[in-house]
Amino acid sequence: MLVNLSIQNYALIDDVSVSFSNGFTTITGETGAGKSILLGGLSMVLGKRADLSSLKNTTQKCVIEAEFDVSKYQLQSFFEDNDLDYDDKTILRREILPSGKSRAFVNDSPVTLDVMRTLGDQLVDVHSQHQTMRLTENDFQMKVLDALADNSENLSAYTRELEQLRTASKELQKLEDFQTEADKEHDYNSFLLEELEAAKLKEGMQEELEAEYEQLSNVEQIMEQLSAGHQLLNDEQLGIVGRLTDLKRAFQGLTDFGADYKSLSHRIQSVLIETDDIASELEQLKDKVEANPERLEVVNGQLQQLYDLQKKHHTDSVSELIAIREELAQKVNAVANIESKIKAKKEEVSAITKKVDAWAQKISDGRKVVIPKLNERLQANLTSLGMPSATFNIKVNPSKSFKTNGKDDLVFLFSANKGSNYGELKKVASGGELSRIMLTIKSILAEYENLPTMMFDEIDTGVSGEISNRMGEIMQQMSSTMQVFSITHLPQVASKGNYQFKVYKEEGAEGTSTHIKQLSTDERVRELAEMLGGKSLSESALAHAKELLQ
Image 1: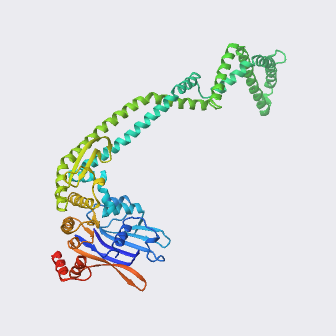
Image 2 (image 1 turned 135 degrees about the horizontal axis):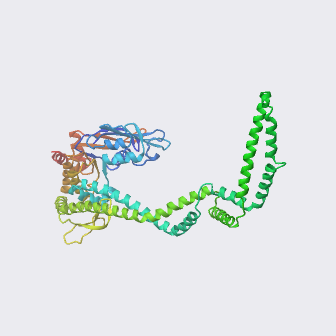
Image 3 (image 1 turned 90 degrees about the vertical axis):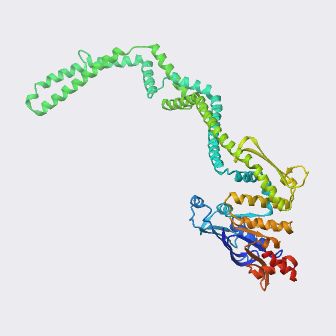
């Protein structure tokens, strides 16, 4: 509930601080005294946007602070989610600087305007003429039915399942979109993959083939060089192997004459062994080398295939071709497996849809059960508010699609006069009728929901006499379970308040300023008498005022 409201340098207000209690509080004052300014200041601290025109003195900042007792609202999770310090006594503060910059704070922690607005909506319900039009909106009408049907748990379960359904449906759509796109490229990708797989690609193959190609292309030159080398090593008279053998024999006889000769003999022996190995290998290579035009053609074909694939895929290595082959294999396999994935996801979507449908049906059944009860309550209350012939035609029909609050279409029709045709509220109900309907609905909701502080801004406009007296009684009844404010011009309503505040203007040397004060019992009598009969207080007006208070 709202505990204290402090406003500095706002519109016609210099500095006002006022404390409030639980129950029913009425706020009165002459037209133009500044009741709307007070409400505007409260709206600022609840998250309404502001500008420099809000400042009374444009050289100083405007500060609006509201203290709330939030102990009954279960808001701990909201504070935790927004990284705010929770306190049963929570303070919302709004500052508008001369520069035009606006700052918002919750318990001295800076917050965005959206956070302040979200919190404010859970603390105060400001019921203005504009808010009355919410009555004509389908979502609000459905909220009334759900409150009476105690559908909160069903709606929570439905919302959870609906979110899962939306997630699964999006995933299914992605799979189907992927399939559509993949199908367009599948045949071409399969062809490319077959080409790459036919090439039997492996690391290093290009280097091996190119080396073999060089050998096969130069067989004659290789054979000539090998033969020449073999002759140089093995010629009977001048061959290197024979000459080294002779050298070895010559030095064998010197090994006993010293270490130097012995070492040199060993080196000659090593050279002879290595040279003899080279001669043997030359002979083996010479025997292996032969012209093979068929193999040359095969190698040439394989290399040309590699070069064509590299050109086609804009690469210059077998490693890159292998990577492309793997990527194409994944794409082709993905298309091959997509059908099974889509089938599984469709089954998942179907299963969740059944759950959502089941919860939607429970919600719908609850709504249908309470429609007669709501009709009865509305017509009974409206009869006491001067609308004895008011009737409603409320129907819940199944919808083809899931909505945020179920799977129903709501028909909420109204007739103000006996024999009149039913029509949509916004088309057939006057502003005064809408206000009385809204007050009735709010009073019903107050019995079923933990509503925030209710602020009625001249909801009694256009009514008088016994009807206004009944409206005051309804707000008084609501205040037994919640804090209720009513800004009113009607003495019948004002007198029903547990507390009454007066908003008034004073003119001073520095201009006009708005003030607010709580009225004592005697002051309430005078205020009510003035509301009844004007400034010239008559005995009858005073007596009537006292009677209203009693």
